[in-house]
Length: 428
Ligand SMILES: [Zn+2]
Image 1 (tube, rainbow, N blue to C red):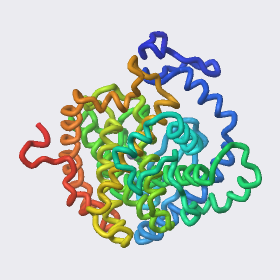
Image 2 (image 1 turned 90 degrees about the vertical axis):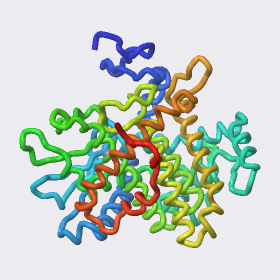
Image 3 (image 1 turned 180 degrees about the vertical axis):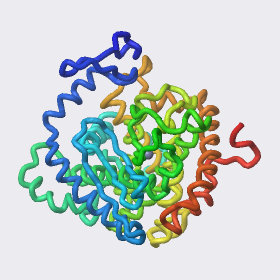
Image 4 (image 1 turned 135 degrees about the vertical axis):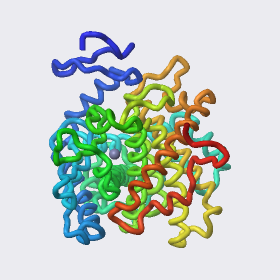
């Protein structure tokens, strides 16, 4: 680590360890983030996450694994890295484990804690929110505040439980809406991450990976530092297939997250907005190691902007159809514009949140997510999306006969035909 390969950000010293910081991340901001760790109570975070993970696991067992005489379990390893994984023992595949590191839960807690505050700041200090609302003619679905109004019927179980404590001792100038949003984001970010891992397991991605040295454990990790040991030397499309499977886990994760929200009576506008924001922030976190372009990288996970495009397009359809199905909206067309507002607003606020918290802005004071939406990137982005759409289909052919749930999300997803243009070839 003697050479400074990361450009202007340079190596960063923390507790005597030299660490390389990705070029877009501000060392000064990162230093402040690290200082916050002193005030993030790990025991408390683990206690908050535990009932959510226990509930999700019990649900997956009752709906799926009990049918196979199996049992899913979960673990929170005491590891600093912001990672999660789905672990399968090939000799005992119906008893898998979902691991979410305490380091990942800490980042989720941190984001959920700060997002309503930064959103409030953005909404109060400049015209960003006002201008966006104006674009949508200030119609009734727009909101001026940083976070939406959360009716008490929309509070998470945890927030209901803890609200009296906050009411007694509210040191910060936090409104009920900000606190409720904080709890919604914390819960929904964990739900989506867990459900992504569950997607890997139910789609049985372990069958499509070759384990080196005849080992018995297949672990699908979310952190990129995990070196791809599997079949990259024997399959020239290894990375494309692996990236397609990540997208499929993302999409099934969205489906399960929506099921969770319905099950918990949280399926309404504030929760939908917080879910969209939670997903976007997670993708910003994963983005830091990717270059500022749409070249397809030799990595197991696709560029997070590509994941985000699939997830947003799929979420918008699924949420709209579920709203109609549950008679919360008259027709899909009637909620196209409100859903577009939530989608645009969540991308904007999550991007600004991430940039404010972590990034160095460019000379024109623009954060990465805005730079990458410039016209010069439209074509390469579309090309990446179409390539992924092709490989997603190819992987579905492998996954469909082995999926542990039937019916599952695949039929619905295929009916949407996302990012496909029949007149052109999807790949070359
Ligand atoms: Zn994954």
